[in-house]
Structure formats: C-alpha cells, structure tokens
Length: 305
Image (cartoon, rainbow, N blue to C red; front, side, top):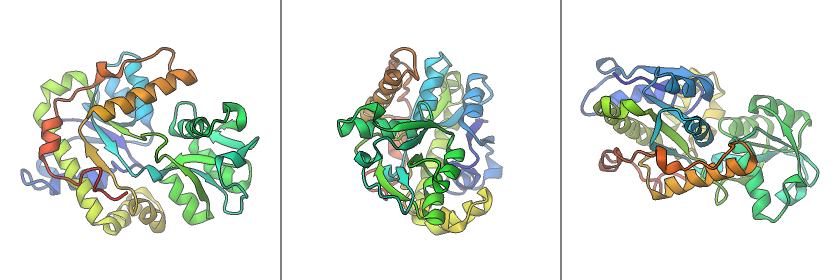
C-alpha cells in the first residue's frame, strides 16, 4: 500500500484521486486498491508527512518541495504537475486604473515569502527592468489577501487557483499579469526516497491512474467541477471557471523540468528564502519516465491552455 498526501482543497482532491481507480484497466474501483490517500489543507502537513516517513507520496508546490529537500529531507522528485500558466496571476480590483506592472509604482502588493505570489511579482518587475522596491510589498497569506483586495487594503493580489476564480467570479477582479512566459509554476509529485524502490509497483500504478484521471477531467470539465465544488464547499461557478481552463497534466521529470526547478531554487536563494544555492539534480528521480510516457494522456502541448 502506498500512502499519498494531497491538498484537501486542491486539484489533487479526493474526487480526482477516487477517479484514479475507476479509470484504470488493471483494477476497477478504489475499494479494490486503496492507495491510502490522506488529505491536508496546507502544504506543511504533506511536507512533514514525507519527512517523518508517514507518507510515500505527496503533492507540493515547487517552492514547498525545494524547501523540504534543501533541509536534507529524504525526498525525490518523481513527476511534475503542470497547469495552464494563466491560472497563476496578478489581480487588481475591477475598478482599478492599473493596467500593467508599471502602474503599480508605490502601490501595495500582497506576497508570501518564497511562494508563487512573490515569484510572479518579482519576475514581472525584473522583466520590465524595474527595481524590487518599485512596489510596496505587504506580507499576507492568500486567505487574508483575498479579503484585503476587494476591501481596498491592498492594490494587487498575486495568487493561484481557486483564489483567482473566486475573485473574478464574485468580485470582478482583473488579471494584469499571468505566469505565462514569466515562471514555470510547476507542482511536485514528491516521494519519500526509500519508498521509490520498496513500493515502486504501487507508485507507478498510482501515477498512471492519476494521468488517466487528469485526462478524464479534461473531457468532463463541468461534471468534475460540479462534483468538486460540492466536495470542497465552493460555488459551482467558481469551480467551473477554474477547471474549465486548468489544463492540468502529470508529466515525467524531463530536462526542462529540472531546469525550471533549478531556476526556481536559484530565485529562492536570490530572495533569501533559501540560505544557500541548492543543486536540484541531487533530488531528481527519472526512473518513472518510461511508465509516465508509455501510458497515454494529453501531452502538455495538447492539453487545454
């Protein structure tokens, strides 16, 4: 049995994980093969579970995984989760005069250290040749920033889903920048290193099931969104807005993924979130590449973007 941790309010939620069993030809239902899926609302419990040997697999953002690996935790990157880069964005209120990053001079922009929110804003400033102090950074967790933006306490909110869809659907917020051509925005399929060998068959089987589940979601977006909304307690329109453009895939760790992770690691070092440069190649495991590439799913090029 492989023990798998995921975000209870994220795209790896129990509905996708449950469909993993139904989508396989090898075993028909989740009850026949119970992967031991464990839900956590935040990344920290998943990271702690991997580090404490309580989990065999965990789904984490790129920075969360890098923080864990850099501490010396016994983890390996065995696959990556990709999504539409437009589902990571810098939002402004609907009536805001701000149209571009240049218009944010001296404005209050939410961020969380090392998270996609900080990465997106700093990379946008860098690309346009603007200094890091061009905006006034306000340290806020996404859940707090989601309240602060419509209330006028901040001027811009860089964030990911489902926060984007909540702000767009309920408050009419606008995207002025997305991660497209700015940052990879990858998520990690991380494994407890000793489990890679000890539970290889179960892990490989789960990865293939997850690929098929992702492919099923792409062809049943509204059906999945409606079910997921009920499970997560979200508004149906919010779920449909997100899932309709999510374009999520599970891919092998290729050379581009390694380069992307190294770039993110170097960014975290540059901002001081990581104390020293970290060599990502030390924690990459490509032994599941053949399995992931052999079992059909929409490729990241053909998936909805």
